[in-house]
Length: 424
Image 1 (cartoon, one colour):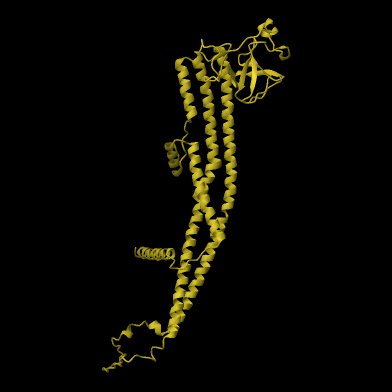
Image 2: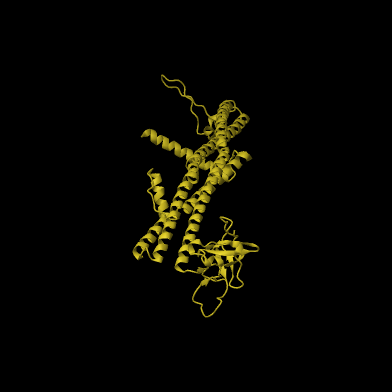
């Protein structure tokens, strides 16, 4: 207990001394050892890296898990070194609700069938989101956390040691400076024993069995420091201060080199974070590509179902690009495609085939359509589409309701109706 109290008192004294040094440095009353410009740049770059890494880490966590309660729960599990329980994603939860609704409302009804199809797509989206979160956490978040909790803590610890070594060095410099000033002053003062003041009285008294005793009077000169009259003692103090300064300088240089090496390692950290950033972008690209593919498949399925429910119709956007053709029927947004007779309609339904070279656009009944998305033709019978372009479309009897005949210039081919917005 006594040792601990002494150590506590010593630490408190060091803390107070360094606090005084900091205050004097702020007011320009104490000497401060400055670091070179390159070292200062390394420190600034390290601080900037740490600050931006923290911001990127926090925002990425928000992106992957928007629910703050869930983030707190995952943080606690991580600190307790326990496995985070599996959590249902929002897409999977929505899929479950839709499937339950279809089961209760009737899975054979058009609405129930559509709910089942959408539920399956949402389930796939949820699974893709789960894979993306897992991949991004391992390849991106974990390296950022390792830097903040490992490398940066080591850098901070060595920087604190360097700061203490600098304060010790400055204190040694100040001590040496005072010792040299006192030595110079002592050499200018006459020897105290040779130039005794008149009021410096020596009185001797004899006593039995004892020798003479020197007694100083109460003269003001009797309170002079004895060291003032001894330049040799100040020489010893200067030598001691110089030795302490050399030791402090050596320790400061050694700690500065260690800290410099750690700070220069920030470049390697940037390279590692760059590689992790590429992995994050790759996983995000894969995730969005999967989402696009799932939704495209769902859109095609819904287009097929829509054609079965509403034969011969195609539903465009909820807000038509132009007013309805007739003011007498403003209640419907479905645009019925004109049906043009064809030679193929004379053949039996099972043997009906479409020959694009023999199909001529009808004189009337064609429609203009705007392409919503890019589409790559699967074979020579289809027409490739580019988003936002305008084409002419019409339908033929016996065709799949999900498809139309599209013309652009001298090119002709089948196009999916789900990629079009019919114009009046």
